Amino acid sequence: MQLLGAFDDPAVGRGLEYLQRHGYSRGIDHFWYMNYYAMQAHFQAGGKSWARWHPKVREFLLKRQKEDGSWPGYTATLHNGPARCYSTAMGAMALEVYLHYLPAYQR
Image (cartoon, rainbow, N blue to C red; front, side):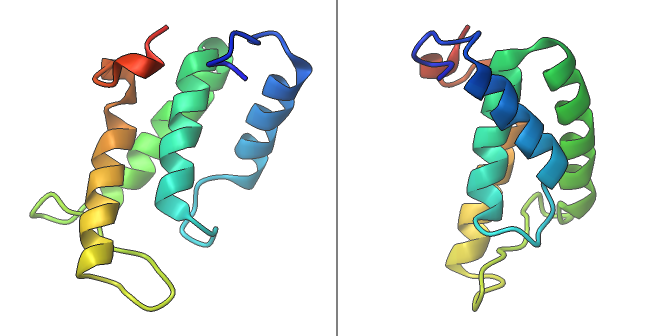
């Protein structure tokens, strides 16, 4: 909705509230994908949404980052290997959202 310019649509606020309530823990399906796009959504919304979301997700991710800079791969069957590559890429991308490296998501 935000990328289409519907910033004030009620669905945006409801979606952000849903994300706030259901969190960012490893117990959810599609953990890395969700966290990346949830970070994008909160950044685009800005203000209180970003201020509440970013610090706690950043802390959560950084506490789980391994010494070599990677994140463990969380899937139903894999905990390393290809899943580790994916989780590391998505973790890094989630943490750099506010740096505007992807021009499609600039405000």
